[in-house]
Every structure is written in C-alpha cells, then in structure tokens.
Image 1 (tube, rainbow, N blue to C red):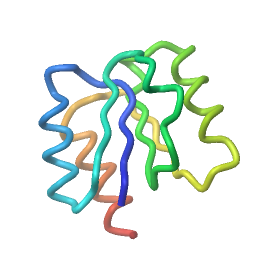
Image 2 (image 1 turned 180 degrees about the vertical axis):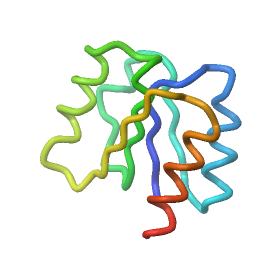
Image 3 (image 1 turned 90 degrees about the vertical axis):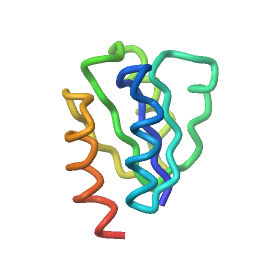
Image 4 (image 1 turned 135 degrees about the horizontal axis):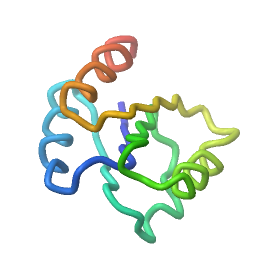
Length: 94
C-alpha cells in the first residue's frame, strides 16, 4: 500500500516513514510546500495534516486527487499517534 503524507513536522519525517513501514506501507512525506507537490501520483491513501499546511496547498493536492481512486484522510493533529490511528483503520482494510 502506498501512502502520501502532506504536512506534519519536518523533524518527524523519518518517524512517519518508519511507522508506515511497520504497516507494510511505502510512504512519501511532504512536510512543506515543494515543487514535488505538482504530481503526487496515485497513492492508495492520502493523509493531510491540516494544522501544518496552508489551505492553498490542501486545495492544490485535493485537485490532483480528484477523479483518481485515492482515499483521503484529514487530520488536524500531526502526531505519530494520529498517523497510527489512520494506518490502523486503513492499512488493515487492504
């Protein structure tokens, strides 16, 4: 399962990827607005940490995901526990 995480804390990128690895998921993490956000691809799960990114970035990413079979989850908290809860729910279903 592939996961794209938008937002979060820059110092937590390695921990986000390690946690996704525990759930047998490949993860791409974009903690800041970068040029790479122009094409997020078609992940199985798109996680938006809404407290750490602007509305503009969220809208841009959601526009890219429109019409694709991407499951989107928004979380106001960007903690490891929040990500663990999301992965528990969605990675176990796959």
